[in-house]
Length: 453
Ligand code: NAD
Image (cartoon, rainbow, N blue to C red):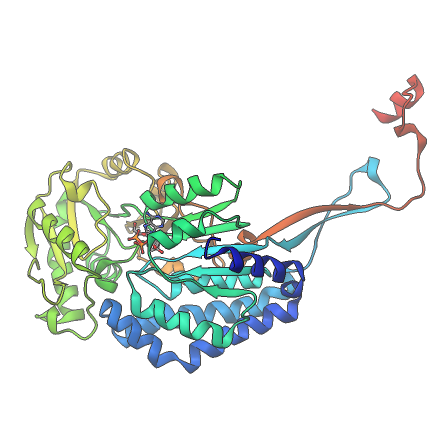
């Protein structure tokens, strides 16, 4: 018997009992999760620090506070989201009524990534519980302290019968995928995303794939360069560049390239001082494999600033590269680290052409004082999410869905969109027995046909 067979049976049994369906149960679980996060805040922040060198302030800002807000927002709106949604009734089906009834999907699998190991696992959990599902959580093995802590804490606060944390590596995911789930949400790279989707196809299980890719920032000559640089620097060097929506590279109008590099250097010094290796708020690369991969990119251009590293600490300085050939490895792969290549372009049109020749990004950033130029960027390109004159901030709005398009993923979540991802909207029509106009039944005489037209 596969080690997860019993677990799956138990989860399915819980789901069939309908205990997870009620508003009270859903609210109860969400409140318990909020209690867990509050009661173990320090341990959670310590685990994040141990896994990624995240400072407590950054861990709070990008993980715990996001989750707390997510829970509060969901609790506030859940009763309305669970309501059936009335739609119009066609003339031929009168009297009667039609509506969409949200119902939970069943047993769902959530596979998290390591870079925001709490947020990327628990935010989908909030949505899945709000929608009334049973959930198996698989945290990333590359953030082991956070994974182990979650495996200890979750059973202390959430329903044993409906929520389980399974730890382990790819082999564990492979085993889990042999079972039938009602939905799988995976966050991580697209190579594994394809493995997940192939396995899900065996059971026709729907998937949400939150993947990555190269997210460009386009800086036009009319942008406020100081503010632009500060916002790009913040989005890029948060979590040492290991953020799926971090600006991966910059396409800058030639005339402001030098000014932008100078302003990025200044912004970097303002945030991390002259020696970022001693800065409290600058993180570390997650493991040796990723560290060595990133160091190799330093040869792909000229270092404008940064570039120093310490293998023992897995420290790599915030780095800007220029003179980067467009076909060099750093411009092919997702960087997922603190190196920012700057590519000069002659115009917005050239930047748009460049973006169109590549895979659709998860995020796209445009910086300009011209609304019309920003609008042109929006209309002429495709991306999962777009933000003008800032980076990352769209994540703070629960009214906006988050998700990729094309190679950067499929499906979406956050706020109501997460609830919808983990629900089926059953189409329901209700009719009374009478009246029962006979003209709809065969035989279709000419008179009946006339009435039916
Ligand atoms: P990862 O290595 O942590 O893997 C994610 C999950 O996949 C883990 O739970 C792991 O156990 C599992 N896994 C790994 N190999 C597997 C295999 N062969 N078969 C089955 N399961 C396997 O994450 P990663 O891929 O290194 O994450 C980085 C990528 O994730 C980047 O591309 C980044 O852009 C993307 N990302 C996307 C988002 C988003 O929200 N869209 C968020 C974070 C990261």
